[in-house]
Image (cartoon, rainbow, N blue to C red; front, side):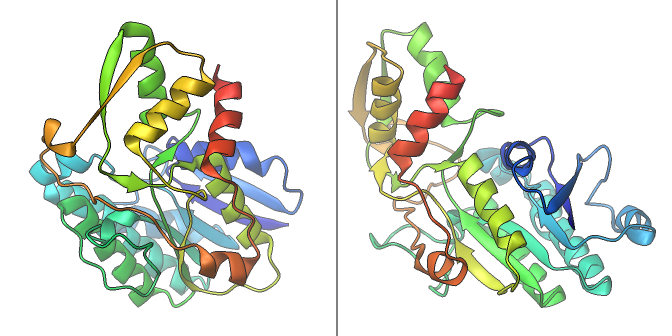
Length: 284
């Protein structure tokens, strides 16, 4: 039985791991919220680990308010970088493999090609910069680190694009969605399963891996699929990103190349439309 500590228990991914973990007989998961373990406090982390032993630590906690990060860069850095450093240090001391969740925002999204793990990074905002800092600090402080970069995460839990769309479909007769940002929606339950599958493997390969659902679309395409699968009659208008100015720039092209995780860990990745349809069947 492998004992796993998961931080960020209240987030989409933390709750999705909890949901998926019931299907894994060889895994026992322990979930902590910030109230139970403040990972931005190194001394509290040290105290917490004094009398505990885990086989893996998975860091799902993150400062994900992309626009707010531009105004509060110190807060974003504390959660996304320093807390990651603290966890990497303690897991190294205890000889525990460390899985850290990162983002497509470490890339600038300028080139319209799926990004590979070893491509040059170039974040275009504070959120991406602090997540990249977290990656660097994780690898620097624990050689047994797996970084999983993901993108466009949604789920039945928390706040996300899918749930926002469903809410707006009920409130409005029409809405506008951007058509010039391209990526692949990621069902947090699929990502959670991939993480647990990696933990269950007999051999662990460390390094950076990409994970999102297969296929590609714009936010406009995504919204239209949500409309189709929810049988909504709302009118959705296609507009450029310039129609919705935001404090933080978004990568225009967020597609991640998943070849490495598929070949290394033999992970089966569902198409985004298939996962979306299943999730909406549950939500609705």
